[in-house]
Length: 379
Ligand SMILES: CC(C)(COP(=O)(O)OP(=O)(O)OC[C@H]1O[C@@H](n2cnc3c(N)ncnc32)[C@H](O)[C@@H]1OP(=O)(O)O)[C@@H](O)C(=O)NCCC(=O)NCCS
Image (tube, rainbow, N blue to C red; front, side):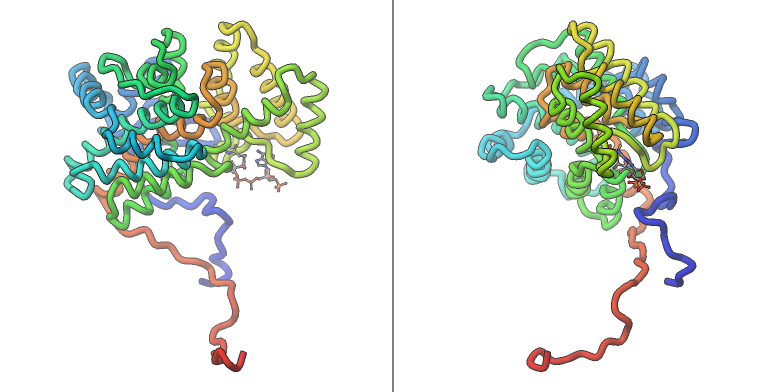
């Protein structure tokens, strides 16, 4: 590769594929799924409607939505061997458990290697249904509880909270969690979706492709940031004074440490998902009788904006939102996957439908060619 072609690090600004799924304008702060603005979807659509939209590129009719809800209900329960495997795992990180269990799901799917579009679609539905059950059941097991069977009449958000806690969630919790799922469902060629598409482009099976995505999501520069945000808030402590918060954050910035939940490769203005999550964090805090985590988050936001001109991203206010909903911190990144499975599978199906192997080039910077080979006993 000639020096003039030297790439920016991290494939920044590289358009790597065409896609009809997600429209993103980072300068205007616009995010839309198949043309529908995220603000409209977050206000009025359910996660199930969004799944249908991502997979079919159009909103469902009432009958089509009913069919999808029935398919989810039929697929939600986990095969018994997956439940056994889950019980046999050591108390690992939630994302590690999710990676292993999602991979294992493929062993019990008779259509795992059926590459017909119809079978791929059915697998997308099953994966999206089952990943919610895996994460909720994992959370429950870690808390010392037993498996709770999904309720066929509850939607995806309600079922998740029910299987996690064993209690029927109230309407506010269901709505808040459903909106969080809608907001996280897709985000163009983010790192995990790109990983899924690269894997799918080899024509490997859909389970392998989404396991690649789960591995990428786990990292603290991507989905792992939401748990890091809450760890930071907890480290500061609910009773930390404003001065203490400022001191810790200023210290981190001075040491050039990254503040989790800030910055984005694409948005130069506010991430529209953060707008909703900020409001949700405040509303839920008020209902719960304390806005301490929200207030602390706002103080950090003001400081990081002032000092570094960085905006909060999707992960920043999702931390205090999930915490107020009573969700364990270890589940925050897995919950991102519960939602993003819809987007990953939509992209994998799109890749399969119009595939070419993804195989870029590297700018070689190693020793000059040719090096004289020295036999082992002469080195
Ligand atoms: C999201 C992220 C990976 C984007 O990275 P990127 O486009 O490669 O941007 P860079 O890491 O090159 O950052 C550019 C500059 O902003 C700074 N910066 C970026 N995010 C920062 C953060 N969260 N806290 C402090 N400084 C940050 C970098 O240190 C760098 O400063 P410099 O030019 O003085 O060296 C990055 O903002 C980040 O690591 N954020 C924290 C993790 C996070 O919240 N991830 C979830 C993303 S949705």
